[in-house]
Length: 376
Ligand SMILES: [Cu+2]
Image 1 (cartoon, rainbow, N blue to C red):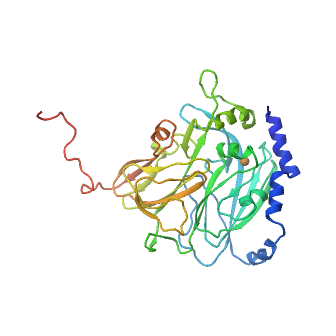
Image 2 (image 1 turned 90 degrees about the vertical axis):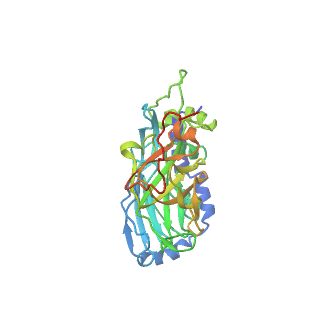
Image 3 (image 1 turned 30 degrees about the horizontal axis):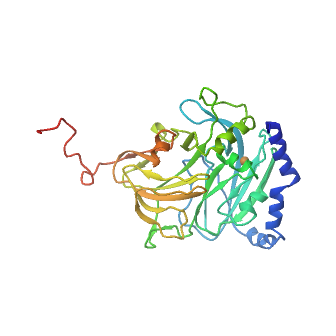
């Protein structure tokens, strides 16, 4: 049996005494060759970005202006209760920057992404960040472990273009627990000359949305009602039991069922091209835009590969982020779902796009409205 206090002590001890992860980091970086390249980086221009909460994305150029630069981001880790459905079910969330998912960070291939990660004293656990976009030291996880009251800065070179997950990975059983408590997000590394279609021709987007999908495992009491805990640590043992069953109680977009529907629907206009970045740090999913398509889809999210065309549903494997580009052709409310429809409708994985514009009768028309059967 592990109590909250023991978990806290365990994670603090792991971080302070440098067990698994510090050892791994040392193994990964036997010397400090990075010091040589740090000199080159010192001469590069710097840009400071203020991150915004998903589904929105900070302003960025689609085609890079000038040469490589150092792009600076700051994220504060927040442990806090969050409501994840209309019934008021509480998740003892762990978040990057207060949102689930954490914000999307956009840079260009060849840029350096420099993140300052802050773990305020008000938190109880040690956290770090593993960037799938980076190379070495457990994706930076081995160099970024911060206890409450600490901060750290990591810089990595974005050498591969694409959409990539980042997530907390503080070692052992802490890893899946932190991830299913909300600690994931995504990075988009754009090619310097922007996105290209299957023929290698440049394409651009008018709007971008970032949809992070999460699976949550909320314990139930004897009556079958979702339980509430004072803190993440208090719920730890019960949550792990549910996690081990591999059946989520919630599968949601943007941290809660209904967080991107109705008034909070994502918006677009007929004729606009929208890029949808979709991540899932822990579990497979299959986005589908009901009534629309993926004109160009990077299922695996890596822009060096030509996009697939005209997809109806695309597959995002757990631990990755993909990107889909679509030009809306009809107005209306579109549901954007995980096309496991049980997960979409019963567990929460549904978002909406509200699209304004003129209806195209050529693409679709109601020839005869539903009425009583005529004749036989
Ligand atoms: Cu964490």
